[in-house]
Image 1 (spheres, rainbow, N blue to C red):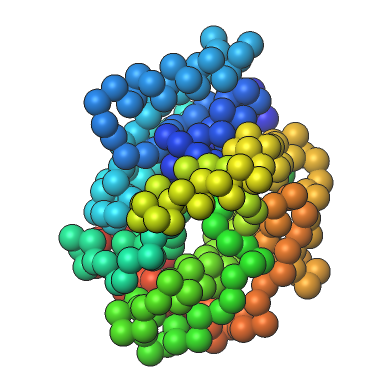
Image 2 (cartoon, rainbow, N blue to C red):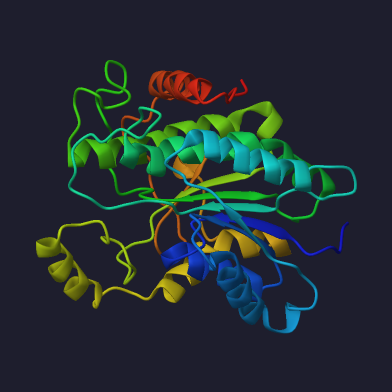
Length: 317
């Protein structure tokens, strides 16, 4: 069994919940590959903060920052494939944990990216499906090397257990004709459930833990994109929320438990032996929607396959 530092990729590590999670994991001895949007001085800032968070482990690891604009699936592909090359080669142990927190809160209507996909759905779902797909070989390498006693963890933090199903997933999977704030939220959460459940059940991915989590009400920078007349009330309400560090303490629970070989606080929904974990804000188990069916799973998988294909990403069966 390897004694090398474990590696966690955190998409959204530059602020909010993702930043707090990356600091928590750095403090536990993980090497962090922080992924987020770039700006002058950001790389140095992120790495310096991670080094401080590492404490006694600072001399054991060398953290990284990888720039990526999650609105662009082509950039997501390029970033993920670069990480896969660097951590999936001979003599490496792969990626032990993948955490994805990228997102936005707006009241905008359907707003296409330069690639034609809706901005909100891209951050909350398409980019997460794309990033995970590209990193699967590195996650399997971690599993096969027993770097994590309980297996590598893929953690998508969005709305696990608290969203409703999106009913028009067949006729309008990309929300081009039925966009609303509620449909955008429900489709992203519903798609995370369905996609990662199917991915978890593929024979080639057994032994990898896929988790869709809900962070609860957090005092973060959520709502930055909101208009000024809503941003003020949101900031006042957020004072009643838990801190990003408190949230991160619960969100990292399955990763740290898997690293040490401890049992998760949660069970899979309905007592299933395989498939996705749904995690509530306190790291205990949540539920899938009543519309979580094999037909819906296959339909969303095929729709995702089409969207990723346009970005040059082939989704494995």
